Length: 126
Image 1 (cartoon, rainbow, N blue to C red):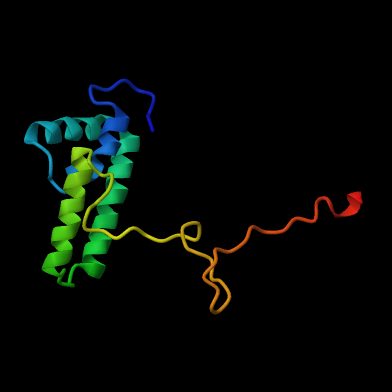
Image 2: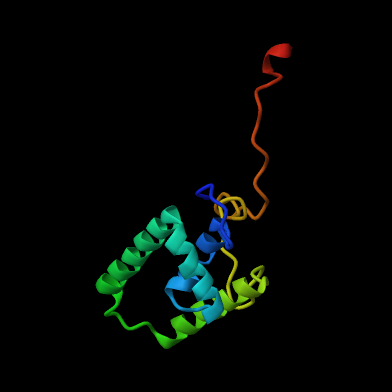
């Protein structure tokens, strides 16, 4: 997204880091750059306002629940991995089984691999 106006800080950079700004998880110098951008860019300021309201709503609706310490730790570890660019495989996580990786069930007592599907393509060539 871009408003089409030149800014010291590009709109896409501001929107990519919007939650860091909202959560006050960035250096003060960057916060100041973002504040200046919001002062001069109404589309980004609208997006900032919308996301700020969403955060307030979530906090009001879900902010009363205690998060288990181990869950919080796992989430924070995952965030750190993503930020460091090492978000590939997480060793503590079991791989999710999908329909493609799941074995097809065979007949009871049949240990052989399932056969390939039959095709009727050459049936009428006799």
